[in-house]
Length: 449
Image (cartoon, rainbow, N blue to C red; front, side, top):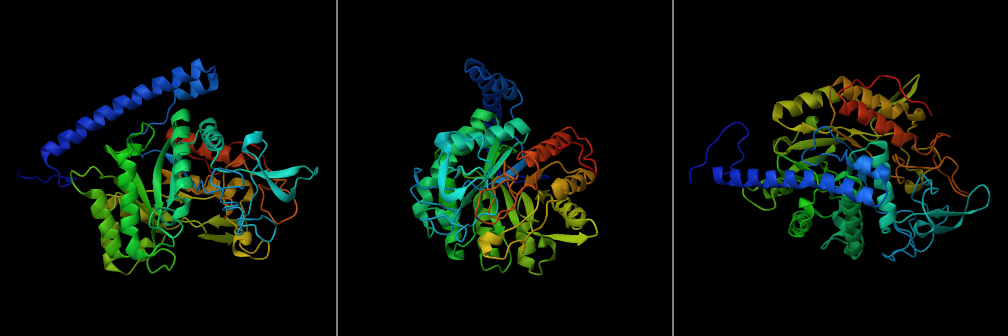
């Protein structure tokens, strides 16, 4: 069969295009039906708030216009199903103490019921009560996080899927737990009408294993029907997937041009059941990479998301995220036919994780102004597709979910500076609403504490 070329040609035959078009139509019809079913089920359950929210189910047929958060989902506690101990709360799985902490913030646990609270020995609140933490192994906890997204108007998440935890990785013993968390996310998105997509993070995996580990897991997700879930994000009829770790010469992210092209070939193979709409994430200085092979393969992606966390400057008014490269980033992506997917963040700190003196790594949040300025800058560029780093990243102090400003003792913690624990959910929700409505995000925060 003769193939043809046109603007945006993908190498598919007309028959393949027709099959994909028909599949897309069926998928869209299924998702419309899913909206109705969500509303009906909420009414039957007596959940009027849920029924109202179900009529505003997030459109899963396109990434464009979405404000989505990174979701680590990597927290575990002694007594949960994983039986791995204090994973990602402490550097010692068997105990948690001020000298073992790897988190910078303590979540506000007031909304979590008893079966989602895991006592943290040695830590207590100001009134002497036992301090507790959560585990993503609990379906109710993940559901709660997604209910917050629905309540505050956030579209969904990029679920981090770390290659080191997958079969073939150095800590594949965590794979069963990671699969359960993925299923928790899958169910929570379905219940709340949010969208989600997988982000494969290549950090710490040897270069010669990346392609095999990643593609094997993607094939499994496809075969199990995960990517055809009504809540799984699609673009142009294809499931969206992100690969994180496009850092040139980085010892922790061992990406090479050869590996990158192998991955791109896999996800772009015409007619393959494993085809996907591919987002790459990595270096914010990507345009200045001197390696011509890197410049070539980045332009083969469907979207690029430069990691901007930690990129900032100071003036008399305090710290500000560096956004000066954004206009040129967008122009270059537009010229190459890439979607530019910018990353915004609320602040930063990883003193406990890196064993630094308190305050050493802090990028202050300035009561939310640090984050809001980034949304304002994107609004001026008329950009409405955004990645927020992160929903639950208390390890590096970038979380936007409910964090307490009255953390337990002892230990060093960064707080929301006395602001309500939902302040950053409110900020992201407000910015999302304005971007959805194609309205300007004003220079000053329009809502109050």
